[in-house]
Image 1: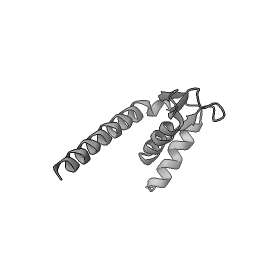
Image 2: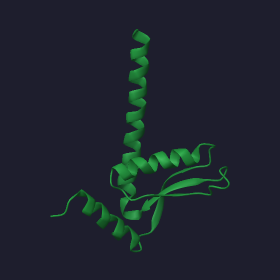
Image 3: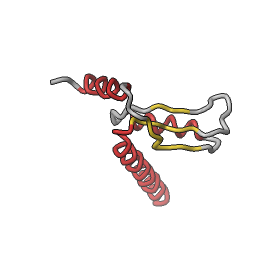
Image 4: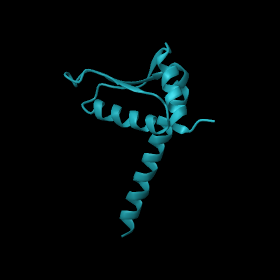
Length: 100
């Protein structure tokens, strides 16, 4: 049985073999590119193949994070969980700083 890296390589190969790409995140905000890159990092860490699509020359246009269609539901859940975790961590840090 292969290791984690072999499975990721296999997933990426399958993703390259004609799977339709779908957007799981999009933003045309001033920080859309940064947020897209952060989300791609979260997906990469969860072994979900993802690409950032957007015009680096014109940052006022929309940036998207796209994944193969077969990973769309999993990617959406991972993004949602990461956002919840980030909010909880921020609230915990704020409440700890108020106690002092």
